Structures are given as structure tokens and as C-alpha cells.
Image 1 (tube, rainbow, N blue to C red):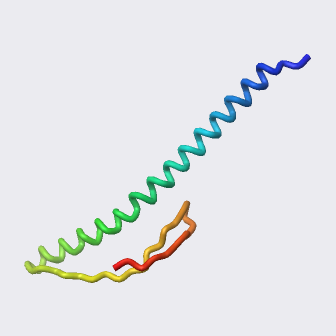
Image 2: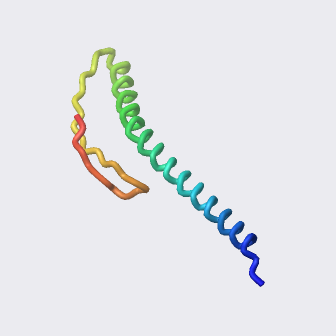
Image 3: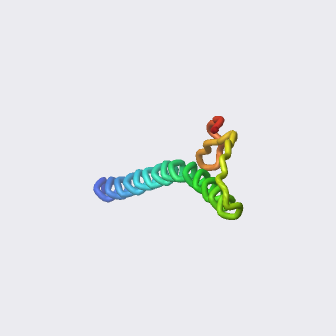
Length: 82
């Protein structure tokens, strides 16, 4: 005798859990990409500000750097940032 309701119920719950985990991982990846580039820029600005305060003068810097965008630690693309 088959009990389709319990089997269907168990698979539905498993499918919901898997879908939820996929969305959570996707949200974490997107948020990581949004906040990682701003963090580096903020650190650069803080370092230049600290240098200005130490020297009591204005600092003008041109930073030419190759930036890498990564997805879960795997580099996806590179671009030049000035």
C-alpha cells in the first residue's frame, strides 16, 4: 500500500528547503559583490586622509589599479580602475 501524501509532503518540504538555501546563497553572493568594492575604496580614502593629516597638506593621488570581480572566490572578470 502506497502512502503518496507522506511521500509528497516530505519531497515538498525538501524542495522548499533547497529553494530557500539557493536564494540565501544567491543573496550572500550579491551582497558580497556590492560591499567588497566599496570597502577597498573606503580604505584608500582613509589612508589618503591619514597621510594628509600627518603632513598638514593636501594630497592628490591618481591610483591606477586592475580590479578583479570574483564569485565565490573564483575570478570572473578584471577591469582597470583609475
